[in-house]
Length: 248
Image (cartoon, rainbow, N blue to C red; front, side, top):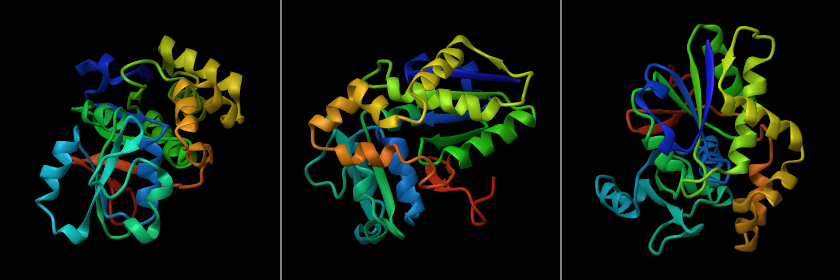
């Protein structure tokens, strides 16, 4: 059994995800926002490459049933209903709605994992729920890949630290799991910061940028471990919550 971590969707080769269970991490903020939206009753989240794709896709829906969401340079686009802030995706706003989402890093990474057996969206806010799913997959003999979305095609400290926490949760007491060097490095980063996620975010370049842009509240929301215990499954070009109504 193998557990590999990749830093950036640009590293993906077909062998990295083919037939595997894949977790995509974009802690600040797409992974967190997706978990929050689904936990608050969004019908589905559809990741799209560009703002133009969002507008085009929205024409296939009744306007009252769809929300245009996403960011470029951290900010909501003109004419969109929502940005990429988890604070905006409240139950009052998203319940029963289809959310069309485009972000700089997270949705690009999700759209890059073609051919995986299962794809799950992972973050700190759904750590235990997603870890249990990935651990069960590994114990069942599946190889697992964790893809860190990164920031502008570069390494992102917060995604690596989150991946390291998942590596620890998934592999404890599973002695035969092989880890690649990136998984070992992620584990070391997680150990350095431990539970002090606000220190992690204040050290990471993207965390500092979000704070400077006025999104300090988002950092606290993204650091709230297990606050939204949902398992977002990306299948058939849409992300829905795993549960009684959506079995694997």
